[in-house]
Length: 561
Image (cartoon, rainbow, N blue to C red; front, side, top):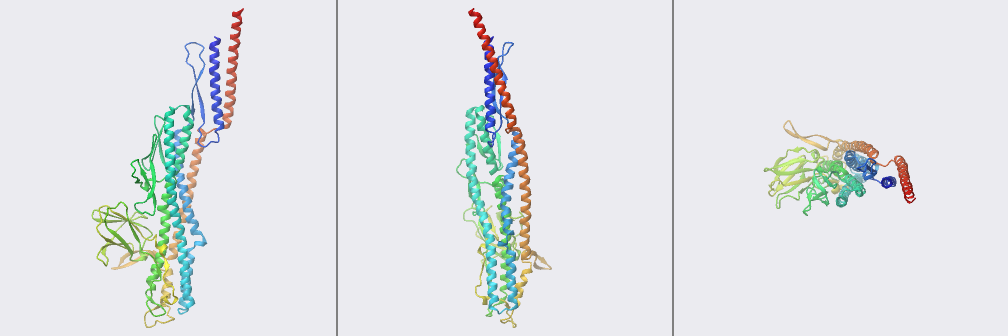
């Protein structure tokens, strides 16, 4: 009997020791991120008799709610995207709101100098002021555009860094999968499970992943609408590569182990910080750069057209006042070799839209899509001076030389390079064409200067060609000041909306984190209570063991006597 009682007491002491160790481990890891509270599982030992055989420790398990964790991961990756987007667009908003980059005031100063010139067309000082203020305005455009270009470059660098981080996390998770499977899923794997969950959460913040736990406790991860990133002990690679549509932009490619990366459609990467950056680049950043480029083009193009209608102080015909580059067309790197070559020019700068275009040759015809709104654009056919076919739309003329292959694609960058190439073409003040070429022309002729001044309030940005009474006219559009104000207002509104969205997403993450911690986190008050409870449990079993020892000694004494 004493032997049985001793075994029972010993099992209780062992169970109490394991329970105390578990509580102590909970307390020591209470500040560790990703740690899930553990509990000791006890069960009665099976017995063939009536008194029982004691207690056994069946395991130490994690307190883990997979439903809450799944919800938290989904909310967290969306919050990461919203935060990344807001962090970027707020910089554009700050830039446009800064007096150091106020393009509107510089345009006003430029036209004020034109007004002064119209009051005294022969004044050399007034003419020089026009050139100086034009250069200042151009520099202001360049400053803003350079800021946006730097942001574009920063997105490229961030995507490259993100690819490295994704690969690093994926490999660590695959390694832990292997270790967890080898451990047999026993108690020793709890720490590895916690570590793996934390790595999955970190990865999920970069690019949204879907986790599927297998029967052997390994986890498989997919992303970008089903691409396998981790499968068991295998991790697949993500690379940063130049976009096939626009080599100046970095995008992500996926390598399933073949050694040939396949470009990932950016539209499938919508969550995590990567999703936020891609959304920002294709949305707010592209819109801001194109809107500024459209504004600069509308100003420079209309000014050139009117300036060339006048004559300078020497009686010579006016030359272009501003220099800027034509649109660029980039063939997709996946196009067939030896296909068509496309070039583009501006046919009417007042009609040009603030958007790039996608051109695709399919079924023997060209398909033109405006990137900013996804609208299909109808192009009017024509020929250029060399007899090549042209596509004419939205103030643009695209010449096609050579023979395109089926499904060849091209990207037309309409205005994104205007500011980078923008400069004042005239350096000689006498070359400013303030007068008109007729009998009334002379040194003091200011009629063309007044026409140039009128451009300040003319709708020279983003108009649309329409046929009115049989005559093609440009209708709609905006003035220079209105176009800039629209950009500032649009970015301000989008920034405010992004702030609200980011805050709301963060609040959801906070709420779900609270729920997750309530279920799986360590509550020190509860642990203190368990510590006291298992201490008493240990002491009680020790007393049982002492009683068994006393009975055994009494038995020995009786036998000896």
